[in-house]
Image (cartoon, rainbow, N blue to C red; front, top):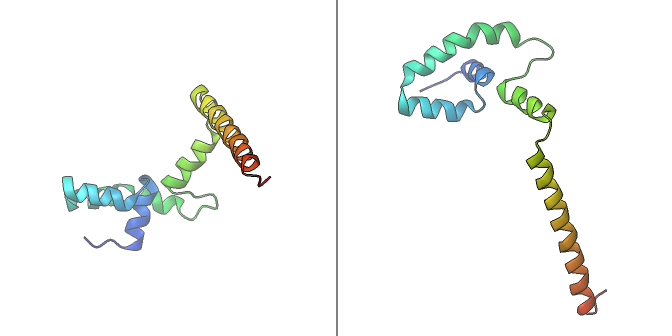
Length: 102
């Protein structure tokens, strides 16, 4: 299936990874579904694409993810990673001293 750059941009307006989405759609529901999605979202894309703050779906999701407050699990994971890095540095110093390199 041949898609124009505009078709790809329309898809990028509503899906995170247009290439992967098209591949999946073609394998499961066919070309007609791809064309239908493009036609469904083309007016919205054309209305917004020239706005100074326009972002495609992947860009919007990335910004939303950055703004999201970290969960308790994410905070704890960062603490664990920092502690592991500290222990690895300390062990590296011990190893260097044992070999007389420090």
